[in-house]
Length: 155
Image (cartoon, rainbow, N blue to C red; front, side):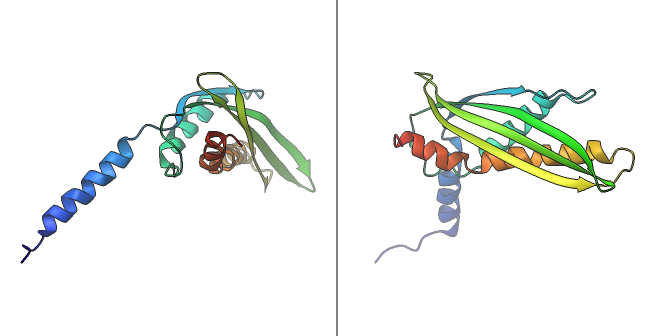
């Protein structure tokens, strides 16, 4: 007859598995950022880096093979505002490339896009630009785990 399992033992084992999974290195060896757009009073490169680095650990990397590492380069390529019918249309494009960390070979090009419309109130455009920037970054990052998996398979 087998001794009953302690619920504490099950919790401890589950915690250990979660810790080990979290400790696995990300397939992204480094992050590079750039911006083709300049805004007075707004450091787009720092904003981009912070959001990318904050997002990477939250993505589902379970399908990525250990060992192969990549360099992720992200760039704000477009951040535009246009007045249209009494409102301001704000749009943003963020591109991301994935290179093999050893060879430097380009593996994947991703893009995230976002847009919104806002009123003419003071500060509305700046707030909208921040929102579309975040949404465009999220759009580019959303497909990153699958892009890594495909790059590891050589596709």
